[in-house]
Length: 108
Image: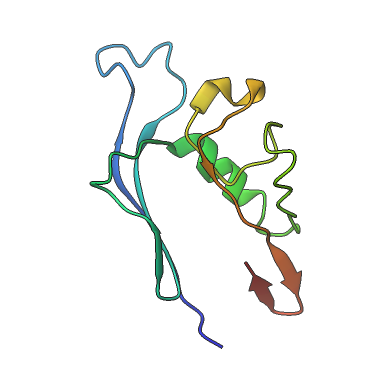
């Protein structure tokens, strides 16, 4: 079984670069490749909530997560977020997948 998960922050910034005081979520471009499939990459006019996405991804390190396509507007329901701080109100911009831990493997 192939074991290839590449994740890189390509560009990271505050929405308003001059005042990071009130924008508590970093934003930017993310490169994600799983096996031979590039999920997202910089240069595609995609902007992600980097800090929110990192937190959501970290939550899957030791706990299963089941993607529920019928209920994506809850704050725990997304892996990659495009909405940053307004996530609690629902976010239609996302990349989502299920995570299952079995023995010493993690299945996406």
